[in-house]
Amino acid sequence: MPMTAMCSRKVQTCLLVVGYFTYLFLGAIVFQALERDAEQHEKTAVIQMKQAFLQNFAHLSVGDVEQFVKNLTEAIQKGVYPVRNKSQVEQSNWDFSNSFFFVGAVVSTIGYGTLCPKTAGGQLFCVFFALFGIPLNIVFLHRVGKILSLLCKRLGKCLYEKGMKKKKTKFLTLLFFLVTGILVFLCLPSLVFQIMEGWSYSEGIYFAFITLSTIGFGDYVVVSIWNLK
Image (cartoon, rainbow, N blue to C red; front, side, top):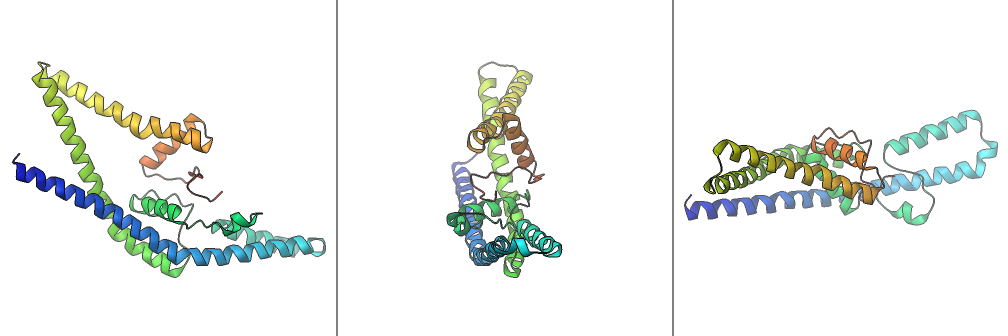
């Protein structure tokens, strides 16, 4: 491959990586701006509803209690939890780290469902963000795949030049990248989740696989980053 073509590919790859993460960064900022105030208003209303219930619960009718449970359930479905201390009330699900995690889930089509925009502006922006973000994510992953494929070819060529048979070279190369992929994308993240989240190792593997496969049930969430629970 000519040197100029190689340099051009490296520049294109760098621009793609910068553009990809800039797109996620800007998306996280916009979602934070659109959703944070509305969420805080909703959270304040829920806390006031809870306080009113605690002050008057002895005089409430069955219908009042059922209405309170209904309102509370709707609030929880919106990601608003009636917590006790003030710091938790002021803490937003739409801080930058959570917003960045959310945009990553959008463009990768994982869609955990544990956090989603509630305002009309946020929902509309989400449509356009995903419309352009999903193809960008596909292009980004395609480029990553090309880089890994190139590394695979170089490894195979290196082994072949050292006198190894072609079939054995292909097998060992494939085995190397398979084992490396399992270690990097399943085993190592599962260990991190076990330490940080208090999950069992099998739960960590389950979460990593559900995430990588973009199934995204949402039954397990990284709480250390995603402050929803």
